[in-house]
Length: 506
Image 1 (tube, rainbow, N blue to C red):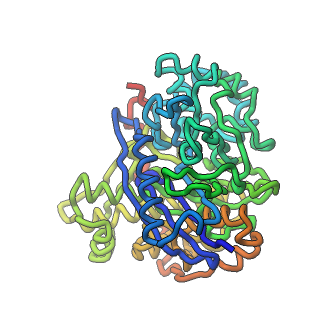
Image 2 (cartoon, helix red, strand yellow):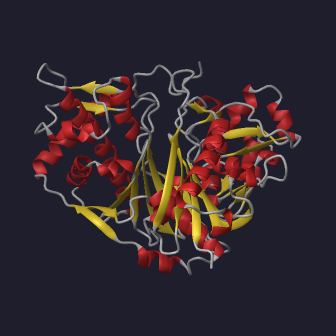
Image 3 (cartoon, helix red, strand yellow):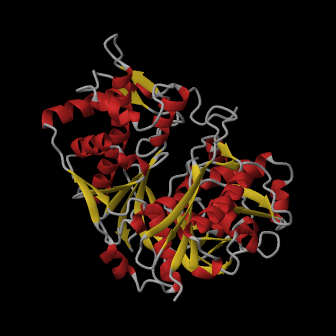
């Protein structure tokens, strides 16, 4: 039996391709970074065609590394940055504009312009989401309003819209020559257009926002074969068996299959998901209701998600923009070289604060500076900021569930930073657990694809294969923890209200 699965991880800062064998072993991986484009304050875009080209490049690279041919692959899974939105010409395959990234905040006023108090309530009741610019709808509305003839062409069926899962799937299955235009519930649940209970596009919401449904991809299960790959991408005839949002894929890879289980992925941003099973839980504490996955004809698994915009990218900012460090790993060395933060706090609200505060008027702030402070204290403050923001998400889950998680499963590149993991455990007063397979995102989408093509028998087999590699336990005194949290909240208060507009339009 053919036993290899190709996993494509389309992230905010890079594209990766990984190959797993039947025993869940990572055989090979390739990666290519790509940049974001910042045309104006609060605007974040990407070149969708470059992302496609890089995706095809890493597929060829990883197949060569693993010395495999398409005939050796049982299936392909794609995970992607959710909310990032692209609209393209169905006939030519050319995007009508750059992809608008999930971090982009330009669309709030546009969303608000379509809503009254009653329709806002109705949209949230159907989608189980707040009407905010973070979601894909703001990007769709901006593109339809600002690109000449876009709305008319969408209504005529000439355009396709999707998150990056749809963009890649369409192109990898043929593009203008028969490409499959689909998405899955995990991505669809982040568009402010899907009926969360029915797992289908809401005609009522579409009418409120005047979005032609001809534009939208078909919603299919996360784990289901939808087509086969093309020769130009090096995957001729291989079934495309799964597509799932990257953070939902990480929850899948972390075996968060039971209600109450929680994972946190530290990447460009930080993304925390708590499994709520088949129950749809609406948050009152600033989290978002989401679909985690649906395999085949099985029921959807729901969750609560919290998204922090800037964590890993904060360390990149120290490296690339401020040039305080040459390599990201230096942040840990510097942080460990001082015994505390010397009263320095860094609030990385570069495009506002996301969950659970949702304050687009906030901007990046450093407080507590004295002549005593050094770049080591600033590096420490940056890592502590990542941990504080994650702690706020855990507090929000505790509020929504009326119970606190027993532990936090972690994954992502920043888990290599032991200082961050320890300060995370200390600030949470909770164990932090790293899996033996740290590449939870690609492992998760590979598992979903493997289930769809019969490589693995079911959720139980996947859960049994998950193992722990390291655990950080709290060591901080309670009074120190409380003082740090008090001063962090004081620092955040000073970041609020800085931007004149909550969502910049110019």
